[in-house]
Amino acid sequence: MKELIFATNNIHKLQEIRAILDGDFIIRSLAEVNCFDEIPETGNTLQANAEIKARYIEDKYHCNCFADDTGLEVECLQGAPGVFSARYAGEDCNSEKNIDKLLLAMEGESNRLAQFRTVIALIENNELFLFEGIIKGRIANERFGTGGFGYDSVFIPEGYDKTFAELPAEVKNTISHRAIASKKLVAYLMSKNEK
Image (cartoon, rainbow, N blue to C red; front, side, top):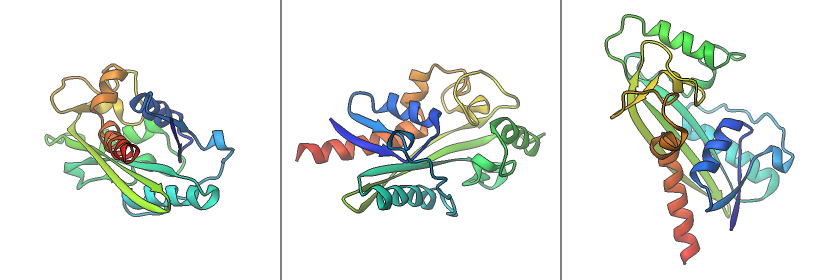
């Protein structure tokens, strides 16, 4: 079974990606390889940040690894919070404060269209490969549900009437932006293994 380092210490992301890749790969977190560095996310795009994190780990440990960056892109906010989704309400904010700021910015707004976008950067044998996943949906007027993390309690995916936080994890892990990008990553890795 192939082993990969996922350049994250975000336990929610780690659990989600392990559930998505279940049985195909052994996924190690940064903590599991004793890396507790704060990797700077100085890129202006999701792709740049994912690549920065993956290259940092590849340079330090000389191994195949991948990293992701995810953003919530809201149409009426011209794509914000986007690359700044995790720190939308400031550097030391949390998900609740980010959601508060988002709902306030969208107060009275009839256009609630949004999308989650994930970019995964894989570095394999010094070569960069990118995989993108997008799920369209809309922003609810208030929070619903207790599952998930980040903006999940206000994001209703297209084709559903419940937020990510209300949907069972097995449903979210099948349709989410991270699932879509991860499936592309797995398809690539499996095709390499078959050769």
